[in-house]
Image (cartoon, rainbow, N blue to C red; front, side, top):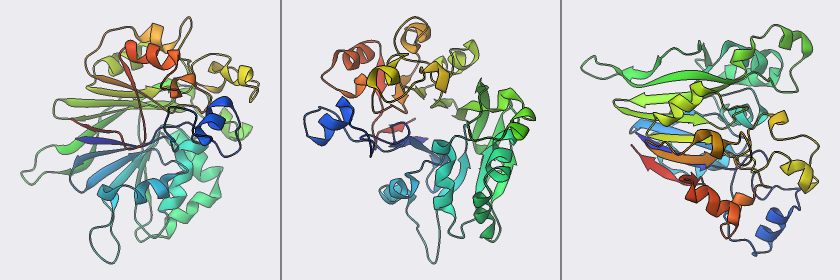
Length: 310
C-alpha cells in the first residue's frame, strides 16, 4: 500500500496568497529554510491502478497533474482514482470535487451528514451528476469497517478496508441553522482508518480534541498522519491574522498543556507525521526550535511529494 502526500499545508497553502506573516514573507524572500506547500491532500493506492483520495483539496487539479501515478493510462478518458473519502464538509475537504467534474464517474464516501451538507447546501456540486453514470455517494456509518475496491480474482477480500472514526462535532460555519439542527454531532469530523492485510494507516487532518478513541487508532497504525495545524493555542491572535484560538476553530495545538505533543505521548508503533500545517506555524522553519522539538519528540513533518510504502 503506497501513501503519497500531494499537499501538506492548511487552507490557503504556504505561502498563502494574501498573507505577509513572518513565515510567508521570509519564504517569498528566500530567507526561510522551508518548503512551499499546497493544501492538504493525500492519496492511498492499495494496488497499481487503484487509488483513493483522502478529501478533495482546492489544489487538487494541480496536485493530480504533478503526480504521474494519477495520470490517465488509456484513451479516451481514464483515471486510477477509484474513490474519494471525505473527513468533513469543510471547504478545504470538498472544494476539489469540482475539479473531478469532467464527466468522470466517481464514488464518494462520507457520513450521511457530510453528504447532505455538500448536496443540499451547495447545489453547485450537482455538476458531478453529469457523468454517465453519475457520481455515486456512499453513506458510511461510524465505527464500522467497510470494503473499498473489488475482491481479487480468487474471490477473496476487497483490496482495502476503511473505517470512519468520530473525532469532532462542529460543522462548518456556512451550514444553515435549519440543517445544522438536524445533523448528529458525531458525523461532523472524522478520522479515517485504512487497512490492507496487516498494514494500517490513520488519517485525521483536523483534531478538535484529544479523545482516547482516535489516539488508540493512531498508536496502533503503521502510519498516522494527523493535525499539525497550529503550534500554539493563540497563534492566529498573536500573528494578528485572526481572533479565534486554535481549539475554537477545531484544531488542538501541538504545544502547551493538553496539546498534541503532550497528550499523544512517546508510545510508538509506526511513523507519526504532522499534516495540514498552517502558514503561521513556526515548525515550518526547519532551523527553528519548534521544528527541532517536534522532531525530537518522534514526529515527522509532512511535505508535498512525501511517500510511504507499507
